Length: 265
Image (cartoon, rainbow, N blue to C red):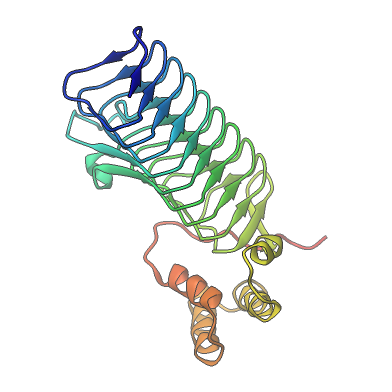
């Protein structure tokens, strides 16, 4: 364990082996740092915050302090950050609130680039990347392996499906289907994330099935409920983990509508 003499680690903090706490850091009394966690200079970690093994936090990041929710009244809330994450300069992450399950959860092997923000009650999967200055509002749900381009933002309570890609500066107001690409000032679906699917090792047959599902949902005059019924029938005839992931996503309860397909031309 290495704690710089200028750092302040409060009594009660739980630091595992090989933890590094750099100059002028603050670690609160209810913080847990697992093995191999590294804090650069001027990092603040407060509240009931747990940082998983081998996660590295860079200068001026601020993690686990009081959420930016005016309804917060001091209730016991937490922030749980997974293993092998990279948290770059000036990143902020807040714990949960009573209105959202009391916790914010970040998965393993995520990367949060400079200036990105994770608000209260967010649920973030594994392998997620937030580029510089990405903003996630409260109660946002993000699936595994989602990539956010620089300066993009997500509206509160919106869901971002597994494997999606959000383009730079896009504002996502509604739920974004798994494996979708979202672009534009007010984000619209540009189609499935074919490049991401190929990189993940999925076959052409799977990608073709995804294209067909997107056609059923977006290139139709039917209501969304009727289109989902068509996808359910398609899933029974075409076994595919990708189709199953989309079907599970659209069957869940949600307070948001869905991002729609970008109009051609």
